Image (tube, rainbow, N blue to C red):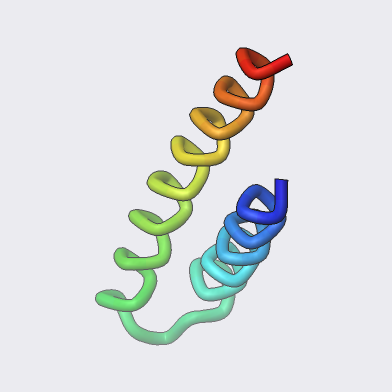
Length: 52
């Protein structure tokens, strides 16, 4: 669960970069980070549900 919180923070930072960033490369990286972290959160939630 702590990793989900950690990933959620990363997503929030990535979204801020996408909204406020000036560098196209940094914005593209932030988009990739958001996608990857969201997928990982989904997988972690599945693992937690399976462990119950």
